[in-house]
Length: 509
Image (cartoon, rainbow, N blue to C red):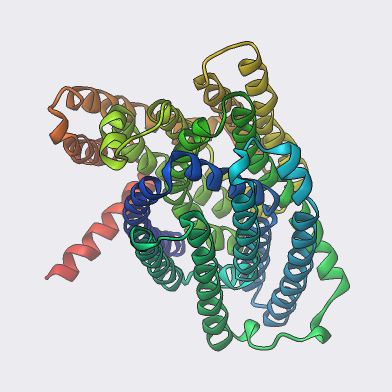
């Protein structure tokens, strides 16, 4: 119990740090978007979202290799094998370079296809859009170079340093947004080029720090290249790429479908919703990022029971924390969008509401993804759960072709997320010994009362004057915290929370 409590306390600390970082970065990003949308205009903002989205769709290997490297580093930390950690980090560098070169070649070669027949962009902005395209390629290149170093920081649970770097990065982006007011040249080109500078600064911050701090990152040498490790990690990354690709192909594929049917203005609305989804995903992934090293170490030390239990707790608490933000935001979205954006495009409010609901649905079983990643059953897990998610893309095309409202597109995504969340449990039951009955009784059953109380509270608060909209979030936090403590915790979870509260009270004294 003490070992489990210690792991839980580290997860809580890292999660809190990530939430603070997310809150600061999100506030800065939201305000930056307001300025950027105003200065660029809805059409240019839509162009940037669309062009950068295509590249993000093709650079999904970025997050995949990060998860792979972190998993293997944490796994061998659990085994206490430093030699393997050095080999893993070096091989991840080689894989990253290979992927970077391949991605740049593919993206550059696709330029004629993308701009001549793929995207619906006004003719007078084609030349500018190409400059943006190449700028985003450069940004992506340096961002991907940072991946192995970010993975090393995550494996060592050094969330504090990554948080500092990302907050500084957000501040720089805000300064760039402010500078748009004074730019007389093409603002879209200027903004795209400045984003490359941020990517370079981030890469230097991560690589220099890790090279000084961690032994496995100090000596990058081709002699440490290991064919067996390279093959295993490359295969693992390949299935992680498939998983991440399904998400990006779905999101950016739907953006392209919307563009083909309705033009760049609807892309501005979808881009705003996707930006909110990205900000929310930082919140939802904070606990997942904090718990993954612990789960991988537990699997490395052959403690499967701890793997499953930590993942169950992660699912429950990540759902509760996200619900605390999503539910009041859904009720107050009209006010939020109008305060955030001076002239919001059509469907920005409805898209944003539905996208947040979709994010919350995924959290029902999100923690079990961390368990599966640690265990290593990635092939069939990816084929089953993520193929379900990408099926929302053809469904969205059919809905628009049939003349349905654009909102039907996001509803298709919500349905696919729900089916995938349930499929995740059945897969872990077959491969890793997860008890569906135990999961339902310790996770789902404890979520019912707090969520009902939260929805009722936000519904009542929605009748308050618009200028008091923030009270929905305050009341939501208070009500959910109280109901979770009294009705949402299992016995061992309440013991951990009580122990943490006792430690906090002692610190105050």
